[in-house]
Image (cartoon, rainbow, N blue to C red; front, side):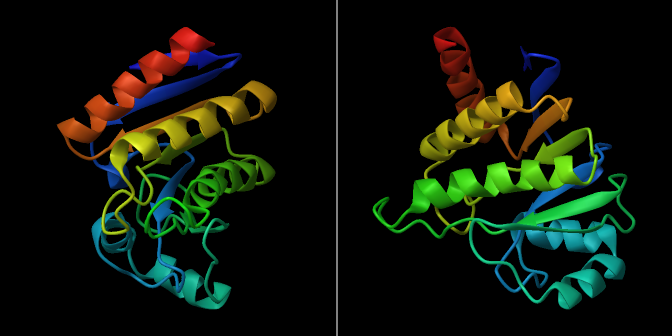
Length: 179
């Protein structure tokens, strides 16, 4: 599924983020920027040791912020690492921090002159963010950013599994009808 936002395109695909050919892919990282499980582990394994070496030099990343490294052996030239919030109950700035992950990643990509970025569904794995709420926050933040910042031409959300894809698809359909 895809929608146009001014000159930009927002795409939803089901697949493997490590295989994306965008300028950058976004890693759902931990605050230490060390290889972990899930998306983070897959990116580090596929990208090779150059990513971890650069991550060590960065000294970590606070929740809601983003850092950039080489893409190593990936098709993407860069990896943007962002740290999503661990979901507790929705009353500990989780939504604000999750939106910041997407916004700060896009700002970093634009500052680097990148034109295409692929995101996973940040914080919906081991960090426990409810998928429907995360989709609403992710898509609203991305759509708002693209509407105001024409430098990025393609944002692709790469969703792992049919359920995640369907939740994001339904949310994007609803948001598109409201705009």
